Image 1: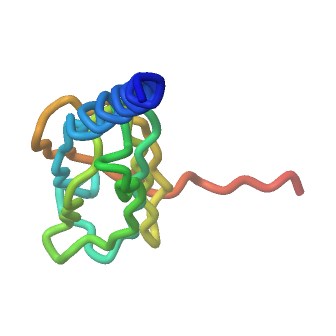
Image 2: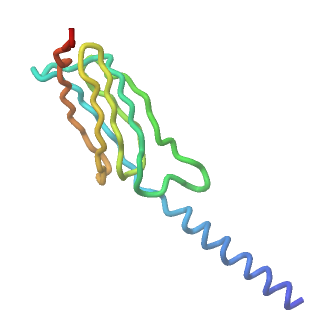
Image 3: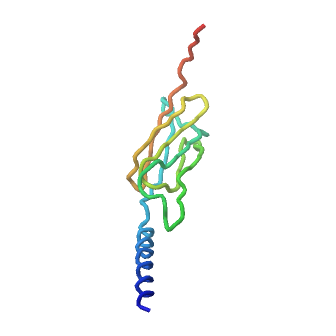
Length: 128
């Protein structure tokens, strides 16, 4: 009997420790991304891809947290990301008539607004 009791305790203790660690939720952040032209006008219908790169744990109570979002900006040039883990986050913006934007941001706040300015396309050159 005693051997079974010790074995059960040895198995139960690590399981409880893992459960406690899972209950400690990874800090999350809500992002508001503002896309504007160099003239300061909002860019509507721009495609915004937000991807969690690295940082705090992406597991919460044994379930994976959504770490990639594909959004479109509204008429005010804003895209709202619900919740994503804090850490390094890659943002890519694609809009017709503008250069593609891509950058990694280190997010440590609970709520953050990220202003992004899109550049016009570069002049195309030919070798002929």
